[in-house]
Image (cartoon, rainbow, N blue to C red; front, side, top):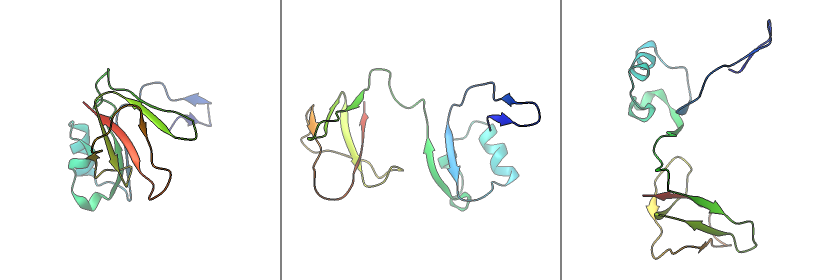
Length: 114
């Protein structure tokens, strides 16, 4: 994607949703996706590893991560955390903005939900 060596052409278009799978998709799965189904609705055998739906965030939801030693997150909405970038999200109990990320413990991923 993005470069065609014989004539130096680059991809002309936009990328909307992005999904990464562990294996090749069957023709039926590709047809299902082309019909508008979300990648995470395909059977588990497709081996989806990651999925980003770039349409799911309201325009006013913002997450900024400070580069300070305290690792503060300023946000609107409800702050959520997960042990994995692919999900298992839960609300951060009692979180207020700016939220100070813990400096010890397991790595966490954060997002906001409106």
